[in-house]
Length: 146
Image: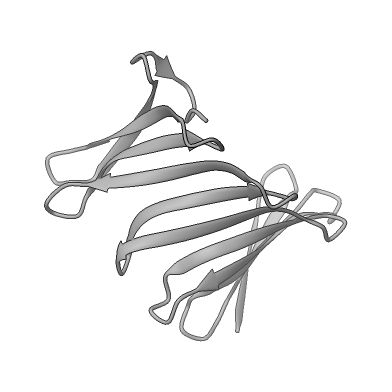
């Protein structure tokens, strides 16, 4: 096991725990006083891809759970976010071009209604530039919808 801690100018810090192969197992955020804010535990498949994670609050209660599916190793097809009650909050579906570069994300609410999408911009070398978010009417958003 390997632990790495990153400290920030405001005094807060984040600790990352990885196994010997470098696969991230846990991320814990602390405020400037050293109080734990969030504790995230990751789950992986046999290839090392993250298949889900659970987010715990400072009292140790799980308040978010995420699941990830893949088209093929390393190529996410969708992820789902669930609340502390176990109910679906939102679902994100990923789309790729013929070179397996992500081009779009579609955001659905708990009822499966499309609420918006993210268009991923890349430079001529395929390097990520930014994601622009839109609602279903094509209006620009500052964050993903749903």
